[in-house]
Each structure stands twice: as C-alpha cells, then as structure tokens.
Image 1: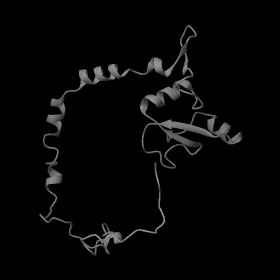
Image 2: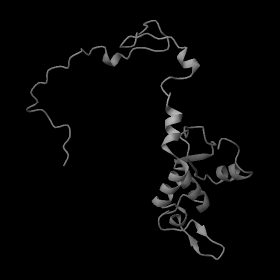
Image 3: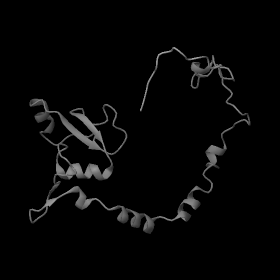
Image 4: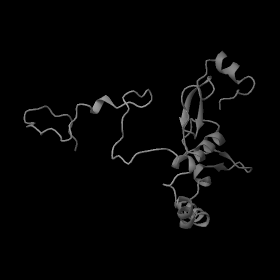
Length: 164
C-alpha cells in the first residue's frame, strides 16, 4: 500500500538493509505507488496474493510447499484451497447468464449523453489540426505512400533470424 508500514518495520528495513517485497494484484505497480521502503513488487492474481500472504513469504514453491498448517498441524497446500475447473464452471453457471450481458451491452456503442454530445464529422479519416497542442500526427508515417514499395530481390542479404 501507499500508506505507512507497521511501527518499527521501516526502521528494521533501513537498519538491516533488508530487501522487502510486496505482492499485489493491481496493475498500478509503478515506481512510488508502493511504500518507498518496499523495493520489489510482484504482480499476481488476487488468489495468489492471498496465497503468498498466508505463506508469509514469496520464497515458497506454491506447488510443493504448504502455505501453512491447519489446527491439527496438517500441512495446507495451495491445491487444497484452489477451486477445480468444475467448481469454477459451476460458480460461473450459477452466477452469470447470457441475458445479463445482452441487457448490459445492448446499447454499448450508443454512449451516454455526454458522449452523444461530442461533435464529430462523418469523415473516413481523422482531420488533423496542425496547430493542436494535444494531438499531433505521428511523424513515422509521413513518408509512407498509399501503396507499399515494390519488394526487391533479397538474395545475398544476411538472415535476420532463423527458427526451427
């Protein structure tokens, strides 16, 4: 998180030069998003975030090592918690229907009132405004014509890559 760490954690990290990590499911893992004392960040699915949290470490083989132990001291593995394909399919079947999507997306391309209020033209291509300070035409395509160049003989040229 971007909030403070528990009391004493930052001090211990800095005093012992620890390399601590986070496991998060959001794609906003840009520099500075996580607490500055957390130097490494791993992106994972939400269930794997929970699995690593239960294990209390990222130094674990989630396939072969237990995440922890139950009250009778028996090991609990990720496979014990992870739903089967059949369980996921049943949850989807019980929770979703095609009608839900048909209703929700029936007018998806119509837009809301604000979208419909945006003025536009019926032109086939975008009308570039050379004076715009927001949107500029890419210079990479200015030299390209409407027809591709004629392919010339490649015999004797070095191979860029070979697979197989």
